[in-house]
Image (cartoon, rainbow, N blue to C red; front, side, top):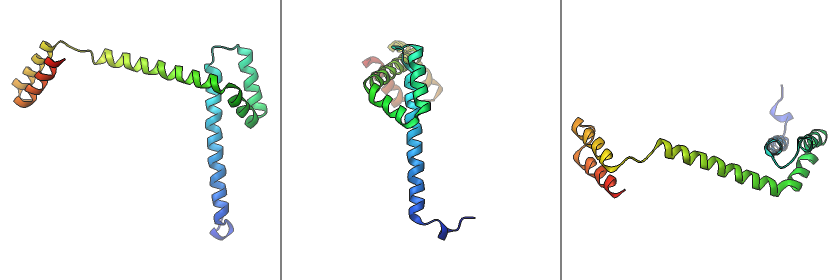
Length: 132
């Protein structure tokens, strides 16, 4: 059992710093490994050499990769984000396809007749439909 007096405050702070540094290093490691596997501009043997280098010399390997490939990593990350954004935009457009104003007004009139919305809400929907 560890007592509070046998584990001083500075050692607690140091332990938290070491833990935080390890978590940051793991994050960088996974980012580098993901980038290595995402690359299409290099051969499989080149990827294996980078992975072996990272396994044999973990800290040095990761930092050397970051220094040597930082520009390519940035370009690949931006390209991946643009691809995901395009896919999300396409999905949103397909799900929320614009209907014609007459259809929107008819749906709003149906809601008004059923009592789901009031006259002011119907007028607002009608104005938006006619404005688009």
